[in-house]
Amino acid sequence: MAQVTLNYARILMKIVDQLGLEKPTMAHEKSADGIFHSFIEVDLVNWVSKGFRGPRQFIGTSPISSRRATRKATRNAVQRLEKCGLVKISDYSRRDLKLWKKRVIRVTTVCKEVVEGRDELERDFFFLQQNRAKLLVENCELQRKIVELQENVDCWKADKEEKDNLIIENYELKAELRALKRQLSEAKNKNE
Image (cartoon, rainbow, N blue to C red; front, side, top):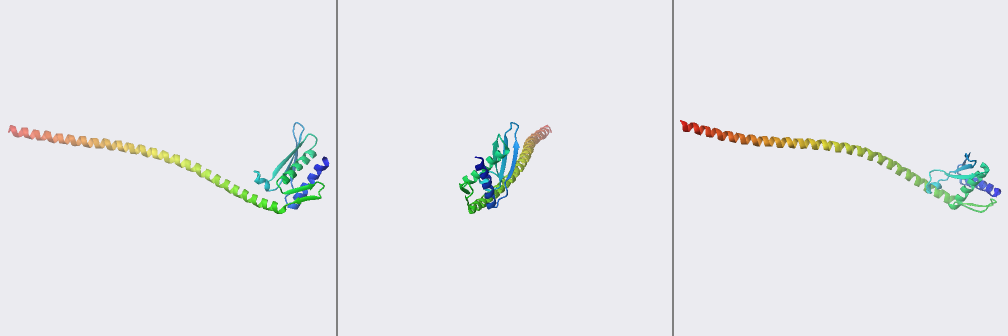
């Protein structure tokens, strides 16, 4: 079993070397309960199509040693490459390892385009979110101004109605005053 998992590490290095990828980064850590964790990041843009950004991280755990955890993580990485259809492993003695470099390059370019498109959409979304917030603030200010103007218009209408009522009342009083003046002049004319 250990020999097979060691071969996975060799296979992963051969794949990375042949595809011209960056060397995988590895990290180890021991948790409080004594279990070893190993992390391997393989820089293949194909992981982006699976919903990940940048390198995909593979994790292996072992209660015995960090080396064993690393072997498990390496095995996970190689099996994922095989599952994605980028590598075909028939013989683990490293004699029969087929790499579909054209397929990897095609997948990589498509995924890069997808990532660029997604990043552009995220930038646009962020820009639109900022504009939306700005427009909401402007809308609130405009609503406040509309309410103030409506109050001013209502006051002006009330003042105008009051003024119109005063004009009508003034006109009626003037008409009444003229009528009284007429009566007074008629009364004076009769007395003479």
